[in-house]
Image (cartoon, rainbow, N blue to C red; front, side):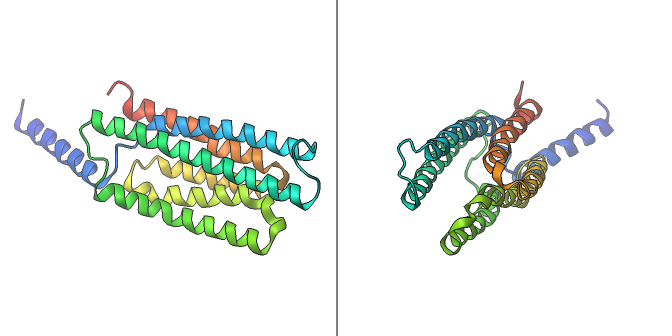
Length: 211
């Protein structure tokens, strides 16, 4: 091996070390697939609850029925979020162990901080909206998609840059959903379900398969 080739290999190793130190690369593509599947399952149950409400199956007519429906949908959303996060943590932990990489360091903390700032802001915006304007619950789905997309773009500089494109897709989808309010659940299922599965598979085959 020539001196020039050795220098190029050394530079390559240094670049890989710098990339590892500045980016959280333990994020698993399978966690995205898992989250997408859970979101689709949750969308199915949410659709069933809404159908039961309109058919008066287990729901009282009028305001009380609407309150019960919202309460059940919130419970379902919390369960979906908890299961998706648990699965994401598990897959990411397995990848970090397999690659001998730390899962909790300065980079992962920066990633979570930049991810959750827009998410918390979006959550507080939705809560305030519902408290002050109860009849605006129909724009929850597009608002979730838009703020989630902003969160992904904001956090992308601390992990794989590919996640930025997922963020752009979520924002575009949420913006379109604003003009088709009655189809919020479908857009929500596509954004958090289908897009996550597609993104997760792409990430898995690009960064994890065979490595």
